[in-house]
Length: 154
Image (cartoon, rainbow, N blue to C red; front, side, top):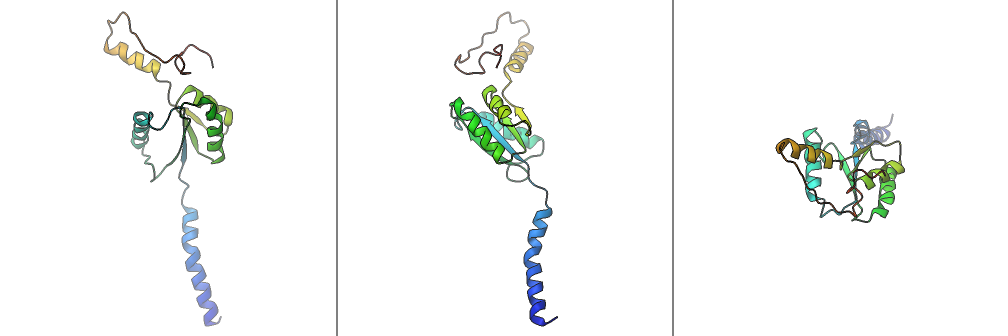
């Protein structure tokens, strides 16, 4: 082997080595976060979502990536946003409301969907545990919000 060929071979191997090393690293899971509200109104829920991820060992930007989609209260946009997350091949979809969960479910059966919003019943259960002697508990809801009526079949 001539000196020039050896140097070319060595240089090519040195350039390809980092690519091969990167290819062997496991892929970072991608969470698709599908929300019917806006980013501004979702701040406290998003913080809780990140806390939950952190408690299970996932840190955004380190060992998990998150693709965010907000419908800004326009529920008719949810199917398009869910389809976009499917195209991006997310590992799992986290839907934050009933309409978002339905859009995610309609968009794919191959990607697991996690429904994060069904907390109304749990909140009432906790309130009942805190005030066991309460005879009446009132709750204010927005009747135009699809999650407002838990008895409604969707």
